[in-house]
Length: 137
Length: 152
Image (cartoon, rainbow over all chains, first blue to last red; front, side, top):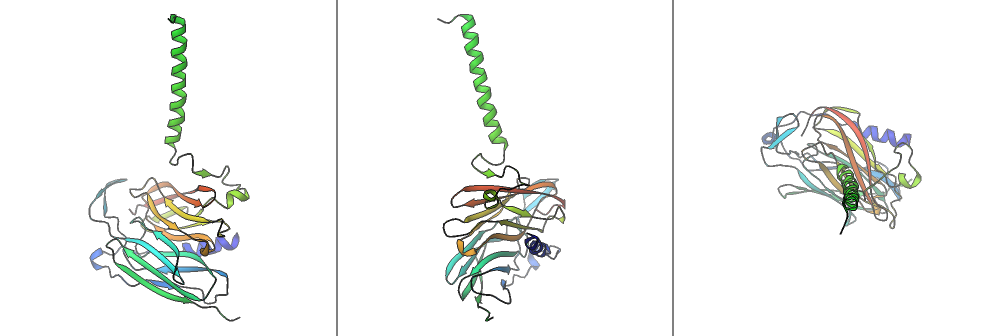
């Protein structure tokens, strides 16, 4: 449990950013981060970062009162494919932060490509792929 | 033909029955979750069965900026092909957009785990996570947080 807590604290250490105006936001392709060493059947953390805005389109008119000001613009879905099979799917909402960094877990049962596909609220798809390779010990 | 006394007694019994039913209905509606969503009896003392199903939320106790609040959700499920967590949803009923998304898993994940960053409104609030098990239904866990500046 202490090891789990330590891992979670690392995950919580996320850089704070000032919100970039939407018109100045430059969307960049997603990135995958994998452990340096991967052993067969090991449970590994996969971290995916996508430089895409996530805006609710709401405007606060009073404390805890919001009105719709603009259309929402956000990442709608993340799909992870491992060796061509669907591993996980995240149906996202605009209530997530800009530049989401998502971490999930994968049991590395075989050497195969890991492909991540993001779909925006406008229907555009952004992909990234990395190969899971076992480290010879 | 009922006497006045009989009528009064039956009317009073009927009123009691209505009040009892209304009370149960009101209690069910007052909860953010319908009765079929299960929760641990004592969140600080989970049984082994509850540990395998109750989502554990890891968040800061206080966040300065509600536009980027990190959260990690973990369920200590076996994640075998016949017993695994199929989905995890994160919610905050105080926000204009309640759901922070639903994460669908498969046994190939190996562990029911998700870490992300969400938007929360200002003030003291409770964030919920609902995990669905393929065999034992839906379970809820929660954690409180204070947000200084709202980020919705």
